[in-house]
Image 1 (cartoon, rainbow, N blue to C red):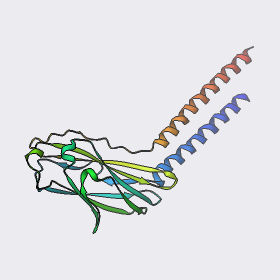
Image 2: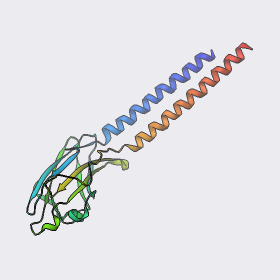
Image 3: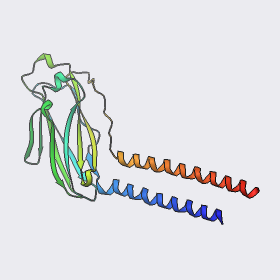
Length: 217
């Protein structure tokens, strides 16, 4: 009889855990899910010279169940000398969101992307014509961080890389940045669940051993 009760408790715990696990996966996958294309490298420009420019387009897709706002943050990861001189132009369709120095680009916000909708955002990097030989043989790397914000303070974050060099060797100061996605809350919660399962099974085993000892006596 005791073994049946223990077996029932174990089965109840396992089915409960699988239910929680599926809810968390559904929450992570369906509630807020942003996809950006390309998803690793946006700019990889070699031998850029004064007067050159390079447009690149990012496609942002809402793969989740709810609408979200998203923002774009730019972070320098390489040479400040070249980074501080480059210009960037950002537009979506006919609307211009930013035009100015790369290092002065802080954050742009795009509002209300509905489920299954897409938005194209074009980033154009320019090498100013007036720059002289002091800006040759330099390179820099920067990261464009796309951050979707949904209900309940949920977020989804994607990184893509921009690499620019003004020499013939194609060397890079910064290297390739990792493509990360943040579902930290999900991972931490699942970790605690696994720990709880381990502790629960340990207690069950100890109880069963004690019951075996008692039955022998």
